[in-house]
Amino acid sequence: MIIDALPRLLNRTSFLVALISISWYCILVATGEYAKWSYPILIGAAICKLTSVAPTSIRPRWQNHEDSNGSSSSSSFFNTHRQRLSSSCCSGGILRSIYKSIAHRISNDSHQNNLYILSTTIILLPCIIFYIRRVIRHLSKLTDDGHYNHDELANDFGKLSAASLSFLLLPVSKHSALLSSLNLGEIHVVRMHIFAGTFAIVAGVAHGLYYTWIWIVMDEYTYRDIFPGAECFQKGYDKHCHTKFVNLLGIINGVGFVILGCTALWWVRRHYFNIFYYVHIVLAIALLFGLVMHYNKMIWFIAPSLLSYVASNVPVAFESLYKWSKGGVGISKVVCISDSRGCVELTIATATRNDYSGEEARGGCEQQQRQRAIGKYVRLTVPEISSKSHPFTAFCDPRHPQDVKILFRPIGAFTTQLSKRLQSLVTSPELTPSELTVSNDTRQCPKMIVNGVSTSSDMLGQAMKHDIIVIVAGGVGIVPYILLLAALRDIDVERKFNNDGEQHHIQKTRHIHVHWVARDEGLVRYIVENYFSLHRQGAHDSNSAIKISVHHTNEQTSSMSSTSHNDESDTLTEFVAPSETARSLASPTSLFEASKRSLLHNVLPASVFASIVFGGLWIVSYCYENIQDKHVIET
Image (tube, rainbow, N blue to C red; front, side, top):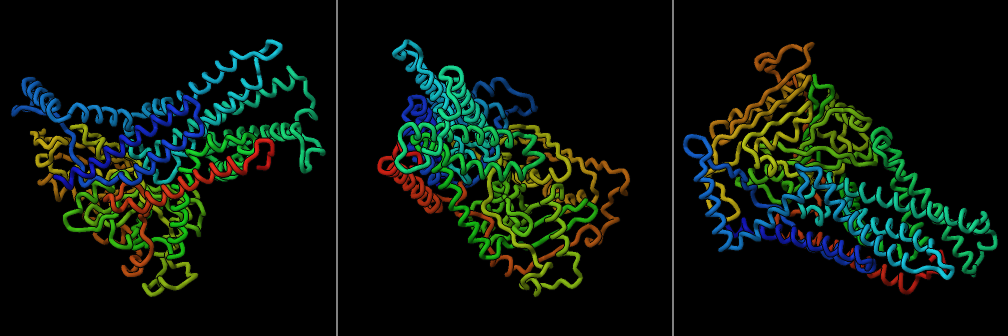
């Protein structure tokens, strides 16, 4: 029980640290102390990086008590809650209940509205308070001729945009422990990045339009009064030239903001992802320098998210380069499923037989490994095809949870080329294991890089809150549920304990209904024979009644029969690499991913993160105080 309680204690500590850090950050933003915004974010992220560990087991959350007749007993209900109330008063259960309530409301796995509430609370509300306080202060101070100081009011819009930039890069930092400690999935928190970016663009454009109105309507400036002339492009330019350079940079940054916002629209991302991707990278770097040159204090505004992003992504990038130098991850098996419109299953071997959490595989740990692998995804990079990484749902064979599997259907350009490249491995009649080491051979498995296994959502935790579960999936969309069904089948709820350490009688009969709609006969047969057959074998040991309905929608193919396809070669073709070759290559797991199996394994990633962020903070402080000059634009 002590071993099991320690990870829960550390994860609760991480949750509270993350909550306090973000609350502290929001207060500092609202009060306008921009030079201190970095401290709560960076300190909290470093602590969460150290204390976030993977749970040793997943505990069931069904709390539906019934009497022997199967109907709910009101007296049992009230007795149970009276016992819980008395236990809470005696053992600090009230604080535990508050913690659970907050954690449930922050988690976004089942409620997308929670993300909008969080975005409003963390990003919008502090920034609006910061803006209103500045506007009230400037409205109370009139100029000598009795008018409002419109320059200051216009600058308030600019600082409102800068304030929202302080959170912009936190949701897109790789393996970020700060937001994951709040049970926020890495995929879902990208919406917070979009929210902060949209708010920054709108406020920045308002800042530019306000100044344009001042120049044209109030001051009646000409082009020469706003932008620098030839005399300004000399050493030792005066204050007026500096102001013109600031104006020019403001216009350039404003145009960059508009282009960035337009290319980041959903329609562009959906149909022209390459344009969105490269414009995003180039303009983001250019705007970083442009904004700091436009306003010298901008570095303090963007330091929290910028340093966190650098400390999270740079080590992962160097680790990816190291894996690339080693030959990429080891592909131990490729299965091309015939009669499935090109579906391919990849098996990625772990170099040291490690699971998703970095724990060595042992006989008694397989159930825990399966549970931890649920709701995972990886970013796969194949330099031979594309330099960009692409996300794929990751799962494992419930019988062999040590290796990472990917099953995909070719849809876009990347998956189509990857599918054809992998099919060339299994269709070559001359392929022999010795040819795997031959360089520049098209029959050799392409070099692939996977750096870290990330969590998309707590699927098992959400499923275990319900007595009746209905799953509807289409085609290869069944992949995320393979492990979920295996974990729900394996959990013996009568031997599990709740967080208070008390055993409860829990309803034995639960129903899981799976409706899988697919039209590819080969894919259906492969999944049923290799994964769904496990549920028939272990049905008598399971506490849950699992019913899987396969809706085969392709009427042109023959009806499926287990006796008509006994030869495995009729359903799939395989490429199997020698185990020594696959294991000698890089592991798909990352040293820097969150939730390692113990506190000791977190020391290295936490130390690297803390060294980068606090070293970077010192550099920012030193440059601001000793190098930057607000009257010299190039500094």
